[in-house]
Amino acid sequence: MHSNLISFDRGLPVVVYRPDKASPSEVYRMVYRGYISYYGEKPDWELIFSWKTTIPEILRVSDGYPVIIEYPILGGLERIDYIIVGRRKALVVEAKSWIGNFTRRNKYFVYSQALNETRIDPCYQVNNYVAKLKHLHTAGSKLDFQGLVFTYGFKYVNGCPVVNNVGSLEQIIYGFDKPGGPGEVDLIINGRFQISKSLIDYVRGNMSSLMRNAVEALLGGGYGLTERQLVIVEEVLDAIEKDRDQAFIVRGVSGSGKTLIALTVFFEALARGYKVLLTYRNNRLLNTLRVALPKLSGLLKFYSTGPQGRYRGVAEKNFPVDKYGELDLVIYDEAQRMTRENIELSMRRSRVKLYLCDDEQILIGNEEGYADTFIKIAKETNTRYNFYELPRPARIPTSYLEAIRNLLTKGVFKPKPLHYDFRIYNDIVEMINDLKIKHEKGHRVALVAAFTETPGNNNLLNAPDNLRIGYPLCMKYNRKRRVCEQLSDLDIYRGKNLKIYWLMDPKKQYPQYWMGKLDPLKYCASVYGAQGFEAEYVGVIWGRDLIWRNNKWVVNPSVITDYVGDKYSLKEIARKDQRRAYRLLVNRYIILLTRGTKGTYIFFEDKNTMQYIRSLAP
Image (cartoon, rainbow, N blue to C red; front, side, top):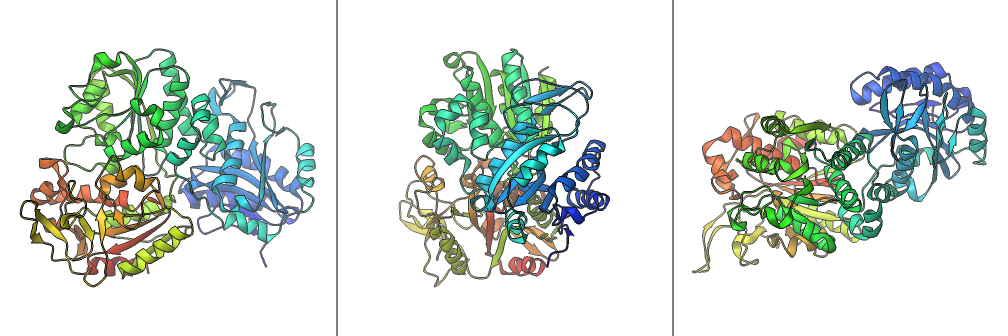
């Protein structure tokens, strides 16, 4: 039997099963302590004021209906104030205890004269929460979620249900007929948010609505923006409208929604008639977007092509400026892979420039797309700039990302209780079979591997040096003689009857693979083909490049075959500067280990490393 008032391992949410028998002060104290436990910091005065004013009222009108308080969404980027649970129904309540009058700044923000602050529109918030629960939460198919804004102490009118007195709220709750029980509550608190459809798939299927109003179209599909994300979108668009020369620098951790921001700004700017380009360095990601958005492929460009593209990327010296004329906006997604020269040139390519970067995803020795570098060059070029931070992921639990960082930087791995499927395998065949079962049940799965043992072969996809999982593995293949001149000494795949090849073709194979048109367990992607992509369940082949020896991480150059970047490649750096190579390997494994939205399965090619990590996470 449930106790009346409970919280969870990380503090939030707090559940009150019988509000009529609960003490508001006791509930407040539990919510206060739960917030500190979840976020590691004290709540601000405004949040405290909101709890003290609305908790007593919500408990009073809920009577026998269970109430879920401060329910975290997608790793805690946002929280639902209250969910009042009825029989097969649930009411999302966005409670506002704002003081003074509010005026509308635009469609998605209101302005507080008393606070002299701009705030996200409460109707957008509640519609966002309801859509996420309906489309992304496991309870969405079993409970009917509705939502309203409860304005306590001020008047507010907009296009969603709004109540400003407890009597009206009480009538709506009693309209649920019967209170929910532990079963309905458990569907919510023990359920989870899961992104079952990739953002690219959603964009491809909703082009017309995105071209009319991207913010609303994404909101309706469960891809609504957080307040911070929406602020960035609005300020970029405002800079274009006001004809300012300005840079916007967004640093976000893996899975924090940077590409969602990029696509929202891209579609909104196009809908308003501006000249805009969306740019990448990653040819695999760019080509996948071009296949998904064929009508807009001419606006999807490389910001860097290197010598093979004759340096004609948007942020390179031979970009045909005259062909495109004055650009209103250029968006640089995955901008951490820019060189200093790229950044300097990009500052001149358009009036407004949006950089989305992650310091933890730099892969090659000459890449300098750190947030601090963008800021420094903006100052050097007298370019006005805004800087934003997205410190928490939306795609994966924050606690999982923190655990991966600690593993790779400290050799400590203490994953906290979370709704995430994390497994370590002794047998590669067992891992692939488990992924196969997931795939047969309709889940999106993928294989990614360390860029080790074999270098891949662009010219002959079934060549020995393109085999990544199998036996034997060829590190150096002589195409003319058709013989392998150097075999890997890795023999763990002997007798496994496996032949899994590198994905190599960026124009055909990669778009087909990440859009679900190739068997995901017959191919694997390197870090360059995984960056920017995601699947629900990802199998990671942890190579012998980063191994645990004598209580520390050790770089093993002999197995590294990553030649991308020539003299700046990981292969070259690992031979000369192991400390620098280690930093690049940490970045690689953060990327590989955070591609799965629901789960990560790992097979280690080094037995000692596997045994050590398994001892930390049994």
